[in-house]
Image (cartoon, rainbow, N blue to C red; front, side, top):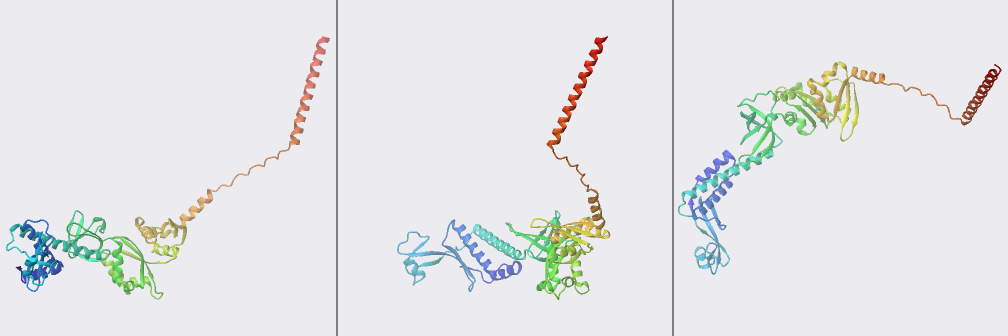
Length: 411
């Protein structure tokens, strides 16, 4: 047996404080390392009956071989005779198993190096699993970190036991990330790698707004006020739809707080990002009107409402058109994401012009003359008249020819 004493327990306590690795994991790693060192020392690859045992009371560790008690030994590596076994334990019988200490008196350099590698690898595996399990639980939640550095447009944020990566697409535009500053980030994803797990965080995710409202508004945490939908363009503007399950509680007022204290805290956390709090409604017309705020709405016409498409036409006063659309279409775009409706916005004058164009483009169809009904008797009479007239004409021509001939003969 190898005497370790209190050194192992001191090392276990230190690793548990620094890396969160439990004592059982370290002892198990040490035992596996001792078995690996034994195999190296004895030049064997397979030794299924070899194990290391640690005695916590004495602080000693040793390598033992488990052998089966038999009458005649055929495999010395796996079996032991009854006489030899009784020298170790008087009460053993045939087919019992006994543990025989085979700890070498002195391990070689190669064996010691192998033991070190096993211990190091096991500690790394334990640390990786602890971090992986911890951040898998934190996935989809808000956490606080410290900005470490910026590498290849990625911001490296320390969030405790590991460094997380904030890709450029998850950063707020025009935001300056200074190393050393504290930052609230959203744990977006956790990827398992050969080394430490790779944690992806976001500073632009809409769920950050939800988490901040849940932290600042007790009614949301208690379930009295419910966040129905969030649409965000990070760094510029956010729209959030809320609904109260208690008729006596104003959902919008609860989120704003006394004298705007709650919303001011959230806006300050988001670097003065503008936040519109709108009241959710099961009525799509009312919901769209609230989502278009702060612009005033004259009317909302539901064009199509089915599973595939939801189109609505919103009419606003002429002086509210630019406010309803927003800078570069931001207000209507956020309203579309918030409600799930495709919103077309027109002013009152535009609607009047469209109606006038429709009237001017309308042309009446020209009247069509009625056709004379078909009458066979009238047609027959007309034919007979034409034939009679033709006969009269032929008689006149014949008489004129006779008269001309008579006058010629007399001459």
